[in-house]
Image (tube, rainbow, N blue to C red):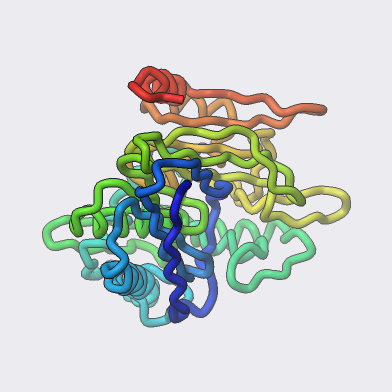
Length: 358
């Protein structure tokens, strides 16, 4: 029988409000294993959500220091990238003068660099400057919107959006805004944090673990007994948490972006939090969720968001073009259709052919 060791510190809160997040993945499934093998779990709060780190064969005397190091890393990321902290690096950039290079930390540079790459490859469907539209539609910090904005307000907010006005330079690491822009990295920050915790654990000598922050996951190694970690992908029902299917994770990260939990209704119409920066409006296509597998959680997080905005046709085309492993759920009149990219099919074929595959 599996032995669990729980470390339940009360972690300090280091953001005034949660990051605006998109990814939704359901819980971890752990099966039985050898009696002498253990999974130790540390958990806490961060970025307005929770985290859980499951480590195989972690000596009990090391859990305290591991938890402290994890908390320290998460605090550092929050201090760099939280838009709810007025003194974070991102908030200071958003107040900086235009046309003047702003020095970035290595961590923020990495996240901005990836975000701009996804923005370019999705032709702006993913845009780290979308914040003014998010706030206008009531999905940001102001919240509480019950009516849709008019075209004048949408046009005004759109004029403040556009990743093309951001110039990233590597030596030295600086970011310059050619026009006033509100940079928001929350669509990938949780994924980046998951990767950083994974790197911390590997540096400490741990080979098998599962890191989860607010639904973004990274799996390394295997569970006790040599079986792969398995995660459950939710069926997109706003009032229920039911399982659509389970997936094995072998040295992979996973993230999901969906339209079924964060939305508002007005005059019998549902308006999703999934906004298209190119139109200024919530998406109207029938793609209800996208699950992406990648070698890092930041990649899975960012691509899930970008593909969710692009929709089932353009999103699938880009996923196949770039080799992205994506599982899409498309809502029909009376049913849901599962659509798998070629990269997703290739991943399943690979893991199912490995020794010990379920």
